[in-house]
Image 1 (cartoon, rainbow, N blue to C red):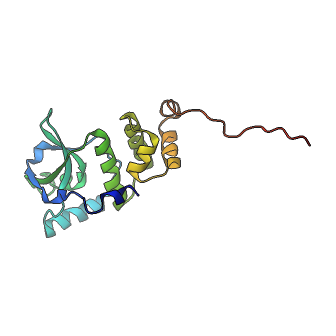
Image 2: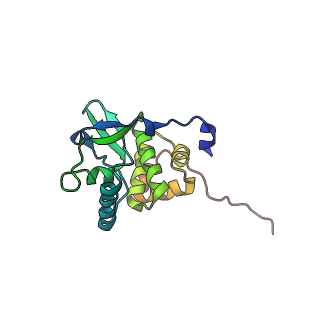
Image 3: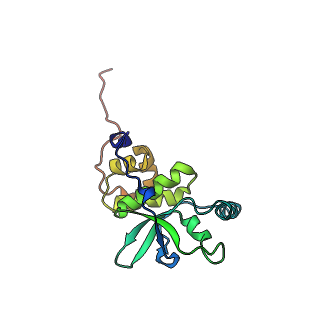
Length: 177
């Protein structure tokens, strides 16, 4: 596994929490995770009872001067005035480019729950469009190449398979029977 090479060298990003103004934290446009209304109520109850224990994972966008959410959208949501009205909110900032952000969102979501297949497929497409090859996508997301291919099929075969070399699935062999 790719993670084994990082044994003993993992960044303790959780120790680098900053308090960011809630208005400066914004949602991403690619998260394939969703939470049922009753689970949102439970999350709000948990934060109200236990405090904000887990920071929102972000990347900083200097052009817009905002923190873009990588993980923690629902924690950010319950920080809004219509829920618990928490301001500022705790964030950690990852040093990722777009491909790293997409992969991190997938990893966080997959490690704890379920996904929506169409949105998962969109995330695979986005990683491919960022220039990652199929093997890199599979490695970063912890899936096999067959799964990458299935997701590519969901999002539109022609464009995503354009760079894939063609090969015959089988060959004809003449037999002298």
